[in-house]
Image (cartoon, rainbow, N blue to C red):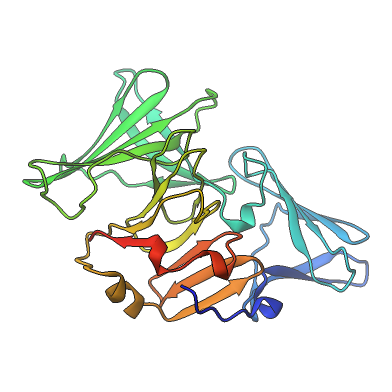
Length: 296
């Protein structure tokens, strides 16, 4: 990963707004890598313009979401400075986190599942062939088991630490029917947020994944927009490809890389249209293919 095309001067994500004669927002656009995409405005959404600050209040099925955009140089280029949909208090434009809601009947059975992101709820289907099951556990936890018949199961644990009925993924684990069976090589528990121990961190699409105080490995198992928020080559372990796709070497993975560039301080590795891996705040002289391992 040491060869990087630094085009940060034109690749930073920002937003642009258009206004009517009364100074009201009529449209706005996300601009990234010189691509300008118009954002949707809901019928109940509204904007408040105060000098070089614009506050957007978005309607949602839960509490309204408030996003603040700022243009500190007054050049028409705005960046997000706060986003109430991100409970961690960070800029949700750089990844954020998903939540989940479960409908639980009187018999403690889960009858419906919803993904919650940016204040919006999206229903998720539950396979009705018995291979996908949910169990309500103790201490505000839910366990999902996805069985691959005759091979093994992937077990995901969700928890609701603050009792607000929105759950977050706590851990996942591949449990083969026999050792070494199935698509994945790593059979240890992967966690979604690190502690002070040395752990293996799951890297999943649409999340900013964080390690902890230990020497953590970051495990990639799916395609998508994958972001590692706090990787340090001196403090952490490896970035591990355990995709189940039959990859055998770092050289093979390198062959799928179509672009490397910087967006601000963030290194972005592009794998065609299938995936991107973003390393937040990692300088080019502190990362190389020596920090990568390939399992499958």
